[in-house]
Image 1: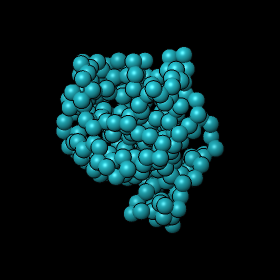
Image 2: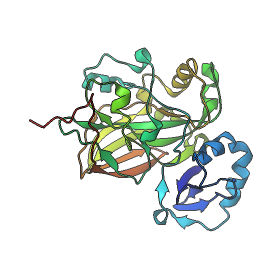
Image 3: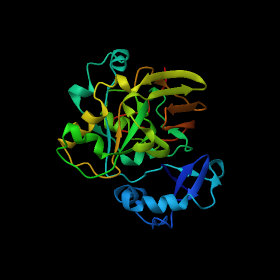
Image 4: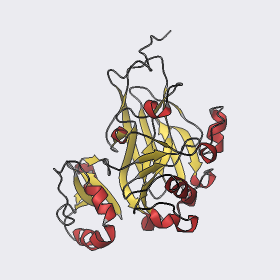
Length: 289
C-alpha cells in the first residue's frame, strides 16, 4: 500500500495514479497540532488497514490534481547513517564509515515534501550537495532488537534526499536547514516493496545521471541499521532512518532540478531555489573569491 499526505494534511492511499481520501476513515484530523496523523496511522496500521482498503472503493482523484505533501512530517526521530557505501567514502576521502561511526540525528524540521523546492541558504562560498538515499520507516516500538527480528520493525520505505552544506562544522547543523530532507512521494509498505536488500536507486541533476547504485552495496544493511540504533535508543512508530548515500554526490544550485528514483519505491522531481539567510557564527556569509 502507498500512503500519502495531501491537501493540507489529509491522508490518502495512492493506487494506479489516483489518490483515495482515507482521512475520515482512519479518524485523522488534518488540522490537528502537532500533525501526527500519519504517525498514529503507522502505529495502528493493522487495525486501520481494512478501513484503508475500504477507502479504495471510493472515488479517486488523479495524483497530479492533488497537492502531495511530505508523507510524514512529525516523526519522533530522524536518524541517518553516514558513509554507508564504500565508494562514497573513497570519493570524499573520508575515513568515516557507518559500521565504525554509527548514526547521527538530523532535525525533523528539515523534512519537506515531494513537490516542495529545496531552498538553498545564502552561503555563497560553500557547496551544497545532493545525497540520494532510501528512507526507512519504523513501524513499531522497540529497544534491544535481535538481528533476526529486525525486519519485523520495518513499516515501509520512501525516497529521501539528504542535502548537505559542505564544511567542517558539526554535520547535524549543516544538514538541518529547512527543506534539506525531501521525502516521498509516498510511504510504500514493506509488503509492497518486498526484499529491500537489492533496490536500484538513481539521482539526476538536470537530466544528468549523478548517482546510480544498489542497496546490496550498503556497508551496514537494513537489519543491522535497526539493531544498531535500537541498542542505543528506543525506536518508535514513524521514526525515519536515512540509510546512506552512494558515490556521485555533488553540488546543486538555484535553477537546478533534482530527480530521484528508487526501484519499487517511487520517484520525485524537485526544483532548487535560492533562499535568504542561513549564515551564522559558524557558517559565515563569506564572499566568493
